[in-house]
View 1 (tube, rainbow, N blue to C red):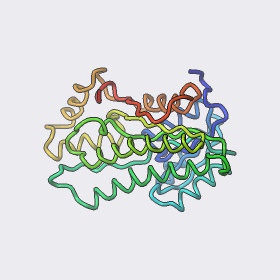
View 2: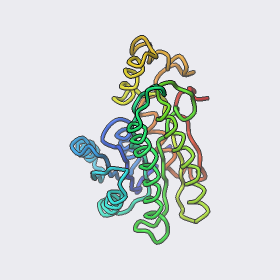
View 3: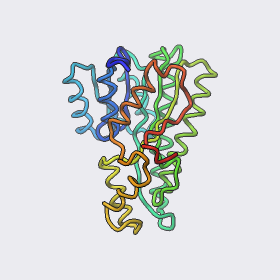
Length: 267
């Protein structure tokens, strides 16, 4: 793919302050897109946007709780005003709270459903409204939802998280069907990342030890690597490159898929 395969495109990245979201934002920017970072972490989010802006990329930051309809409306309006359009959504914001099923707390389960499921569908809702003909952007576009390899395998300790990411997969496919049938000009796909040693990924490894599923963090990580045919953990750049592809014209006839970027772990 060309280095500027997304030249002229305008992207909103949720959970873009750090981790996978920040890496995807950087990859999109390198491919030529303008970037709006959206996150609840204002200071970190502004720093992430500022780092991208140093590369002469039009960039902004908007504070966004993805579970709030009104905040989505403001985020879209700011994206269109700042970037001069809007045709890429990276629905990345999400949370994971580790628990054995026998110990699940109802409030933790509801919180994961609220952020991972409700937040994702609200992102699609407002992307469709903005990108479809007659919307404030109105030129179609691409939505990439971030699911997880946990949607495809039975990984212990993360039952509710796995369920929410399976929901992301299903909503992706329904969204792709609706957008296509209604002539919105919006493609919708999702990515299943493997385990990545970000703050969130390493917290999961530590939590797996705490609930008694591994002797120590090295054992927890080692078990994932052992299950991965390519023999390593995922890297944030792996996910960034996949997102660039799915948003690009090279993927113009691809919609409604889940793309595993997991080294084969979920096959």
